[in-house]
Length: 406
Image (cartoon, rainbow, N blue to C red; front, top):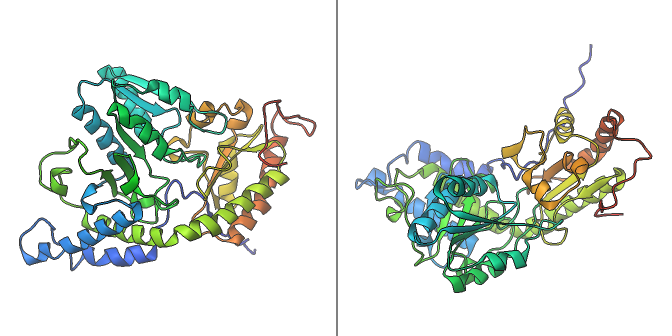
């Protein structure tokens, strides 16, 4: 009996994590073996590693457009960077008892701030977004005051790709003496950044979102910003993050940053074109579907399409059987049958929010990948809708259901 060949693997979940680039792996390998020394050691074996960490820091500085390489603190990833930024701001300004965030923050920010509000008495301002995921600027302006210690607004949303006007938001906070942090985990490496000309005080990033290794990230701290470390116990990172440096991870992050800087033009032209073709073809072929988020101001690699009257988890399982990896919004909420907090905050119709499916591309994706999804997904949605008690060919979309394409 002849076995059918396994479907070709198509990976379109790069906002969850990216494959580690071959160049990154090659640069990391020596630091597992012959260059294994502790960079804090005085002897030659350890001291010989320190220049490579400086190189990694300089590469990351260039990607971020930071004024000084010393403004970068290496961490274990985006979550640690977020927590460090939030707790540092509150400790630095203890007399201020208010925090401002958006309604669509990643849980790495949202959960920490909700905990602080519930257990430590902070007043939390959660700024709403409109139907395209754009921040309510008037509500944001009204929340700012000299009682606010911290604003933490993501640079780009992980589910929809919507980009927030971070430079403007940071400038608005300055007259009140508020510390401004942005979770830029999704934005770094996808859109050009120039922090040296920015009012942003702190920024979080993670290596594994830009084809680097997992378990390493960084926190940008503008020179002169008040800072209180999350970890104490050693002099590493100029006393700002105790613990033996993750040398191999840091080297990998530095190389990934170098590659990302070189590839930003490609990300914004070739990858954007792939995303746009995937998006327009799917919406044209599948009725009652909507592209979520700000169609104009979003990351070049991301589209989340809400398919009405189907369940997102079922879509993902059937795509997986066809060799296609996608996501129902954030990977951190995958497995939940509830629509994500992002879809709810945007007011996406409940029957559509359940079927929201995210496709996030990278520089590794090709036209063949897009062709495979276009060939497979319309049939998947048709089969799932055939099993839905809420769907028929005559079903009309709700009055407030506005497809991005007609």
